[in-house]
Image (tube, rainbow, N blue to C red; front, top):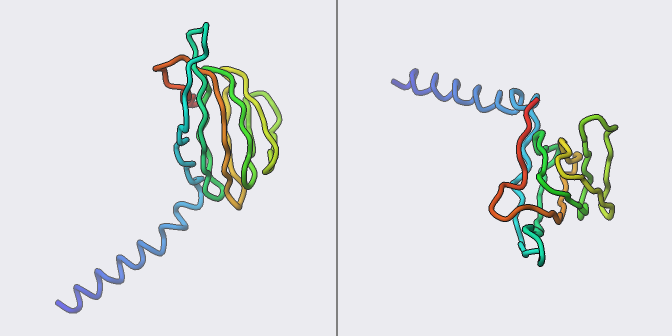
Length: 134
């Protein structure tokens, strides 16, 4: 019985030690944006939203598009913005970038991670980000 217990312990240790190696080929996922506020835009059928997004080191938000325009300010770290058909753009803390409605893009953080605050315009009750697999 001791031999079986020891064999299982060694097997589990081997699996645990391999996990980081197996995960090295995939980027960590960014956390979901925390919505801070939404307000109606008077005289329209739109609303504005504001939220904070946190990215662990080398994390990314998968390829997606927004249904309305968005402006993003980088509070900490750096973000690489990859908009389909455009060169990659690195945005550092203290800088901002904007995206037009329906820009298909991926956002990735650098090795130190990143934190952003964003404002966007959307249609109330509709999902703002729509994932766009290739």
